[in-house]
Image (cartoon, rainbow, N blue to C red):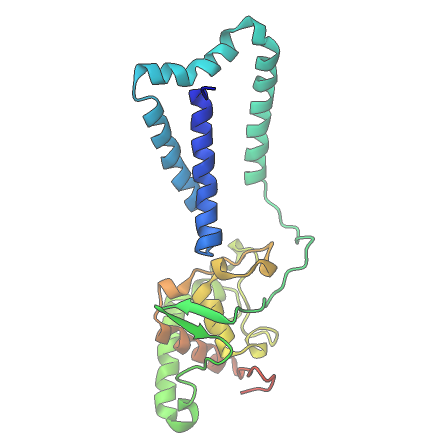
Length: 257
């Protein structure tokens, strides 16, 4: 049985769409942003219909089911149903996308979700349980060198992070009120004071897209900083965070470092 051209186009788009999902979610184990997926699908849709309408015959075959639905008197009932459903579906989709919601989600959200055991970044794999800040030992061994690294971390923070987390590290940066959830307040004893440096490294390097499912339904707006900062820069920022707030990082044994 010959498949109508319009159905062929729909099937191709469906296969490509779910193919993207499988490649990113299953194979690459990465979250594909909805905006990026929409951009991909825009070009795919344009490409598919260019191919299917390349010839006059192809264009007529593609439009035939739609033309028959609109012009065939025997399909009046189906036509009326479609003309009611399509505007309602478009209106509902637009409403869902544009309607603001400030209610907390019904599901409980883990503020500090458990990190994975390993982190892949900078062309290598990190053991999050065993990894340590390579500059932390300078605090005792070479205090002057340690202060230099803290200052370098402060410069990286001001250049990249203070817009959301604030110049006082209190989560009240100029962009903070536009975000949901709001950025972390590092002055709060419930944030970095309860965490290990390796946890902060994973959290900063992975950003919002790297959060596990237990962090849903709210998704962090933090960028994937491993794409913008070097490994050393992230460690220096972590030194600055603890130094400025006067907190001490915890060890995996539960004691303060």
